[in-house]
Image (cartoon, rainbow, N blue to C red; front, side, top):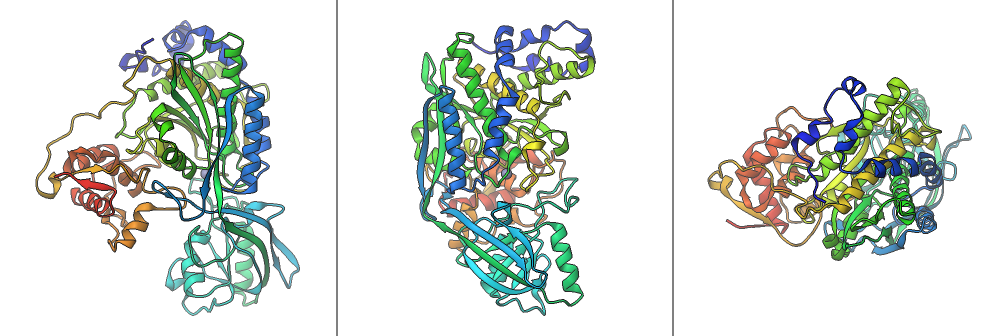
Length: 616
Ligand SMILES: [Zn+2]
């Protein structure tokens, strides 16, 4: 069938909910899926089944390449087999710190056996890896150290260390361990790090003093060290004692380290019928700190629930087998996806579109807003309208249910909430695996379902208790319906060229660049920045685009419009046809005005490190 998803179709979902209450439930007929299929999905999908799987995954500290990740991968593969999915496998790709997969320098595996931090005089345990693995920063190395603690504030600049001797001591920092490693350990000889870094900035930032945040050291730093993560409350108490002139001696013991290992990616399929060589992929990311319930056990179990549901309905004859194959992927975030798409060009050729889920289960306590996020302006596609059609439907049905107590498809889980979904139709934001698919090396359109904000992201309080089975059920419905429709779509034009370009410009603004076939992937990946590393090696100064306040303030959607967003799209727009001026105009339309000279300088630097070639 051919889908009619343009203009009037989308506008059908922009009517006020009040009008819909009075109207006949005819809007369901405008969906690109018959009512009987919608009812079949709504009846089979289960938020409780998804949440029970989430409770299993959330037990594991799922660092890339670690035993905890392997345990989570085994759990997912076992469930996928039990559900009857096909081609279930755990794919292995060596990761040793040297091998590159496109723009991703593989990070060696990291495992920890134990880690404890004690306040010697008070005889008090401040942190324990066994009890709360988040307490030991990723990439910590073995140590047994008793030393004094020195407060260095942020600890990210020389001035923070003025008049302080940190050699052989432990530094107390409010920044991420990786941000002070070079200076405190490499240059000044500190023995280790204690960090109270806070989670990502939202309205609730810094308010809960009990949160312990996931911490990271630099995966490639030559300055081996360790770092313990403590709460704001613990850090404040230590600071107060230090300010009074007390000497605090801490005893740190760590058994941990990096080692050659592998990226592991769980995969499974539901084979298609007529077009089985083509695929629609369901994606998520399986790694992160324990518990990591919303980020991102939620996305993992929701695509798993999509797989279970579609497999059952197809097996029972309640849904026809889709034309295209459905593929399910559970990789470590961004680095796993960049690895897969570089190591498996056969999959890049087969995958036509992606439904990516990263944080889809946050209940009211997380303050999450659910987003159905569109692709970047460099890669327009109708797939986002398909996703929004179903999200708008769930918004309407769930509001009708909340407001009146009845709806045809309330999609409310028995153990979950009854609040309306209130999903937002959101412009492109980065921050997860969908940026890899939509990079100009791959050009695969990706629907992105995601919560933001989440006040507990990346902390020990991102727990299963915060997860709402109703939310999982609704995300699963939007994902399953969208993926199933795309798997049957008769369209072959998955992406379209963006709107007409402006005048070509002259001089440096008239230059044209084209992406080289290698390396494939976005410049900023996980724990590694291909551009920064290669520009440094080539002695190219940091482009002005990345300097603070280089881009004047402009109206922007939340979470977009930082230098990295401009950089991502500038590279994506370099297609061998657009001039520097036209790229400047396109990225300005997307994020806000930027000086053409900044765009030209960044493109020139990309050409100098061999990512682009200059055409004219
Ligand atoms: Zn995350």
